[in-house]
Image 1 (cartoon, one colour):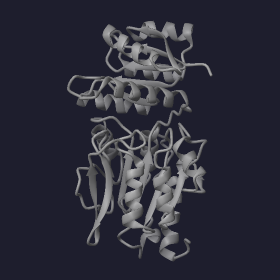
Image 2 (tube, one colour):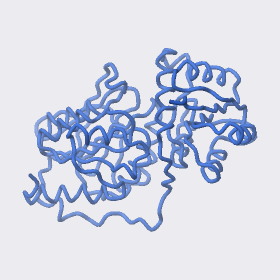
Image 3 (cartoon, helix red, strand yellow):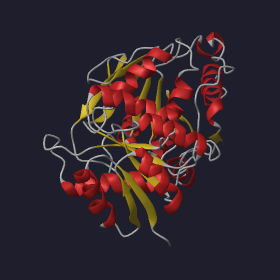
Length: 355
């Protein structure tokens, strides 16, 4: 198999060297060129035809967002954004994902405490995921309307229902498409999205502005409320739930990565299977590898309603495929139909028709 060809674009000579050394140390990828700015990168893309581009957010002559927007319009290709962790750059990185970038990786810092080996693994995993991506330019379809009110689906429902969603590569835009169509009168939603530390806060702010639902970055020990969404904090801790009395609460667990991820979807799903049983819906969206497959199976075996995003609408059909293969779900749903499928399941639960 031919190695993944990578072009690194960064105005820092040191960062270009770091990325080159890390990537070239992997057996299945190679840096075919580096560029100090987007104008040089434009010509190198034509000459070298890379499979994946790593792109700095802040650069001279043309910033990363402007270049990304032009690139995705004229010559779409998988892009991994490389960003220093600031509040401004986190928001810019979220905009980059909206424009079509596939992944985000933070720049290494002495304060992060991340070892060089761990950072190399993170960079390599993002590049591998990007190389397998089906490019999507979701944007916002002005003709797309929110789902109709769903009183008929939720009237008489048990108030201890919970919806759990897991996603990775391509997940930020998939989640945006799903959540912005859901009405406020919705059971609580808990989400694990693979994302670097510090970037989830910007993502939460963006979702909260665009959703009828209230979106939070989980802090731990919050009571899950209807009409609210709780997102696991990136790289800080795993998120789980536990039932205390009549209510579910969020739990943050600072432990080792699971399936090479922290937070891990499996941790969330296993807790939902244990605590909520059949009073739950589990959904696996786009993402690479198999995180979530075992946890979704546990949810299904506990009686939960489970399904996955279909291949045609997934950026990377890894996590959904693995969940289908291990019997965690037998239904794959197009992204734009997930909201409808979700509430169909809720209505069937209310009427007692779901087996």
